[in-house]
Length: 278
Length: 292
Image (cartoon, rainbow over all chains, first blue to last red):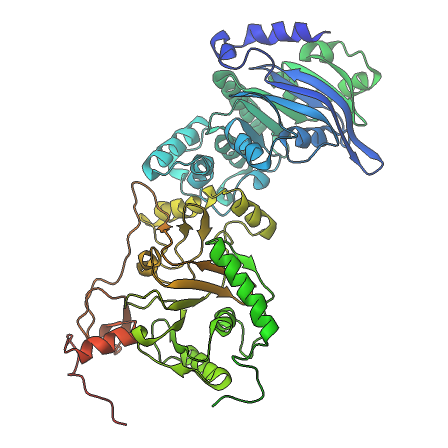
């Protein structure tokens, strides 16, 4: 399995006009990311390219370093080595070495981060509309009416009724909170979205609905995404490409269907065979 | 009479120097909260320990001190702080705004316009405007450093969503010289416009939170708002019942248990001087000099 094959694969599946919108080249270029916790390895030697419109899944068991990797990529944690080169609107920049204001600006314009627990990603004391509007206001929106219209629109897109706009997230169900978190992140039209176990802690039918919604939004907006999960069904549905991690290292990567249907590495074989069939 | 036991204005000279340094830094960076080593004062936190320390560091023997609490010169807080400085510094005191050189205030800015040779000292309970939105001090400091102030508008958004208008009526957040967002202390938002381009120097002391911040004279102070919900300096829609002033901030006083109420100026000195000048409100009696 080569990277060029993956490129062709994602190119076929995404709208070419949206693909051309970004810079000609990978959206995100990850090179040799390493993070150590003292003598222990968080993750090491991770390199990959993510192309515009492509969805990348990262799977592995607990403690395999997938969340550490995601935190390093999203700038929540400083890696000990490596580069995360993002194709910003003004050209490729290394997100690891850029200044904090630049990284924050990136994190609320071109990037989005969906936490596993909506409580980490939402302001629980602020109404749904305020949650969605926060990124807009952080970018300088100062017109209440327009902020509210945009918020209402986005609540509709994630299937939250418009009359819930002034309710606090604490009054929402788990699935609604997660959808609200997605709306809050996508409102500024990001190009890359990081997701950490987006369906964790939700029951199966709600998971299915959320995945359906996510798939629709990702395709419709031409988003690139990096999804960390331990749920193989999630990557089967959402991801174009898959990376399997064990002990902080990438043991196998390739097209999702290829990796899942014909796993080569012993650990991947174990992982795939551990899924319960009903 | 100055007590011999204490240094002038209670604090020792080194402490005053430390506070003056914090004040100078605050003046140099308008709106920035300067940490300082707040001292234990002989009064409880919440009574103005920050303001008292700032005042003590500013006072000189020839100063004339005025202390107000919610605009009034005769409330407990104002009386005890005034007495404290009479005792420890022996400075002259006054109730007239235009005769004071240092004015310590809790929750109001005097109605009488201030002048270039005056210092206004605010008592601040919670100096951090972002505190109730973001509880982490490390994070709020970073937000100030990076001018990451979107959250402040989320608070105002919530106000409008819930009440139909910006319902924050005191401690209304302001932006200083287009840079720092600042808590103006719990003054009514009616007073916010007075802070901008004020000839007097304005100093803010928070004793418990150990912060000092400042507005040098003629500093631009803008109250945050939305384009379609602009800031308004609101007050009770009445005239003062004692002095008939229509332009001053009013307190509502319940006068009986049958719904009787009156509105009076919260600034007692302003009200008194207007009545002296012959203005008479709905319930006012002609002004007479109080019996000695």
